[in-house]
Length: 124
Length: 291
Image 1: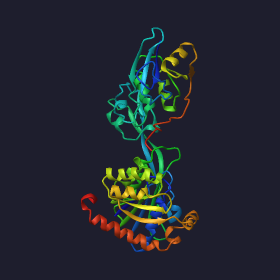
Image 2: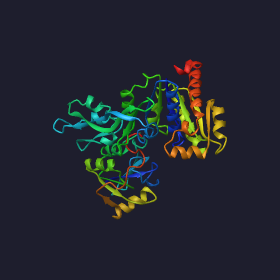
Image 3: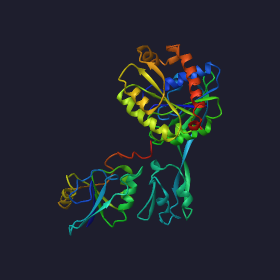
Image 4: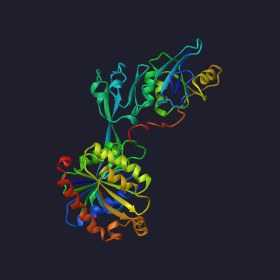
């Protein structure tokens, strides 16, 4: 199964990012083979709408699920529309989070888990 | 002449100065208009006491996608600068709270599958004050994040260029709503307080004024508190300090009771009338930046 984990750097050993829309990198990992690849997040510095933008990007990466720290309302609506499963987890590195996911310790979410924090929607 | 009163930091006395300036000028027989552009928290009406006789809704046009005509081609998502419309799983999704109402998606949709529906963002109100000031304000609906269209519509509704003197009471900060409030001004009064916070935000406000190429001067309110760093900054940045209003408990108490500065300290009638003359003279001597 191919999944995406949010990260602060371009490595499987990078710190795990609890931010979804504005994380620096997205680590695409294969849970069976252990192969991984780092993709820069095109939404990380979007002036607004980072949530829908990152989901649009992820929907083109042929993955089934996302693991991050929390989902804002716009991001979660988009995630559902894209037919992607969303999980939340805690961990120091992306590798920690991947291992937790494989051990069934990541929690699947069915609603937004936090208010959008950074873009805050439209410009104020 | 359009004089904008801005501050960077909130709570420096922007509205206190803007309202008393308007009153002093109206008293000196100038034709004065006042636009309260602080649409997230307009409060100048508490001091100028206009009687509102006209109002108008502010709408934003939000796209609505006809699913039967939409092919999921994604052109709308590509042209949207705000990611307010995305195509996911072949379905087009609109996020109204991200939409700036620019109309690009509607214009570019090859299937003509998008129509627009007005969504009310806020309200404009206008009326005369007892002193004959043409007062108008914008009021953003609670929970709406976008102030710019309300300010923009306010300026279209009550053109600040038609009166002899228009005072624009800008929002605090240095983001888009501030730029929208300042962009047509002839002169910007930057109200600050001599504290590290006042200085920090004054620097941002000065950068905005420079970026939009409008001459500015500083008013130091609550003079006597804090330190001398604001003065040092103004000297170094070559920004004139036009006025200092001393810190005084009587002023704070009076404002809290809804009194105007010129009523609490009558000498400010003349001081604000002189301020207009000072600004006019500065503009006359700096035509290359005033243009």
